[in-house]
Each structure stands twice: as C-alpha cells, then as structure tokens.
Image (tube, rainbow, N blue to C red; front, top):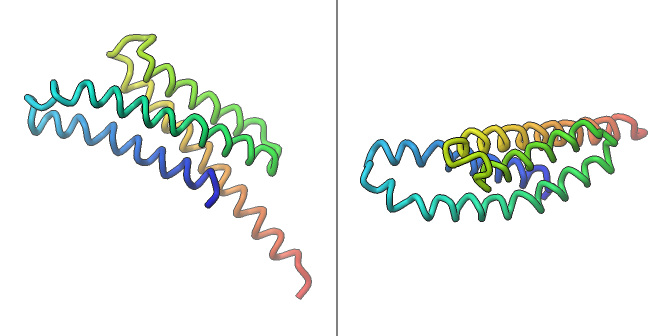
Length: 129
C-alpha cells in the first residue's frame, strides 16, 4: 500500500472523528465531560500516526515527482495539525486548526496519488505492444 493512500485514509478518520464528536455531544451533552480527556489523547495518538506516515509519504512522493509544492503543502498541513493538538493557540482553536491541517494534508496526499496514477498510466502507454 502506498503511504499516500494510508495517509489519505488516516486523514479521513481524523475528519470523521472531528465531525462525529460534536454530533455525539449534541446527542448526549452530559457525556461530553467524560469524553474531553479521551478526546485529547485521541488527537495526540492520531497526530503521532500522522507525522511519520505523512512525512514518509510526502518525502517519498517528492522523490518520485519532484514536486516541492506538494511536499511543502503537506508539511505545512502537518504543522497546522500539530499546532491544533498542542493547544498553543488555546483549546478554542483546536478544532479549527486540526480540521484545517487535516484537509491540507489530505489534499496533498490526494495530489500525490493522482500524480502517481498519471505516471503509471504514462508508463503503460509508452510500453511497446
């Protein structure tokens, strides 16, 4: 499995988590206090997975495509996620920063996947019949 596909899947899980938790809190507001500690731990665990997977994926794709822009966008997305999880800008900005970072990272993984498929398609077309 390509690292970009794994990274895109992880980004989807992060977004699902960010959307599902507020819906759960609206459904059962008393459970929100119980979930607060676990939610921070969840963000730390997801970030701990995203950083190495994203770093390897973006660097590996850069080696194949030589697209510095996708590498930079992906790394900026990871940085934004880390800023959100670290609460440097406060708990109020955590969700906004985390979702912004996740969408940025997912976009970079998506571009890398498309480039990988285009390169594969071009190689298949160039083969003699």
